[in-house]
Length: 140
Image 1 (tube, rainbow, N blue to C red):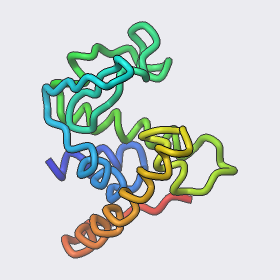
Image 2: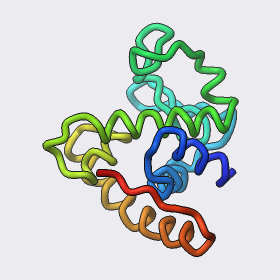
Image 3: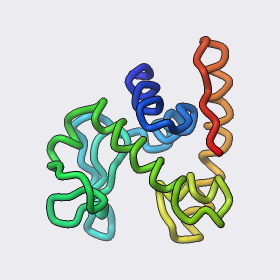
């Protein structure tokens, strides 16, 4: 739900409009596994990719199963928020939108394509949040 995504954004202190934009682009569903051409899988609503696992640890930190990521919608949103927070905090010499698009890919070509999609959606979601009385967190 939108409230689940907003709660995840607030928990990790990332912009809710960005997470909602990810949701719009990724367009996954709870329980979904999508096989990619490189053999990895995208899971759940935010299409969290299996490349983030080292053994049973997500991004080398959180011990979690693929099943939980795919099936538990709010948890999937929290992982997306956590991953966005990590991407925003790393490589601070990069511009903001490049770091946002690092959620999808750090490869320049794919990052650029994702940026072109994410920015207008983030703006639209920001306006929606404001119209609906939600506080929009900005990231410094």
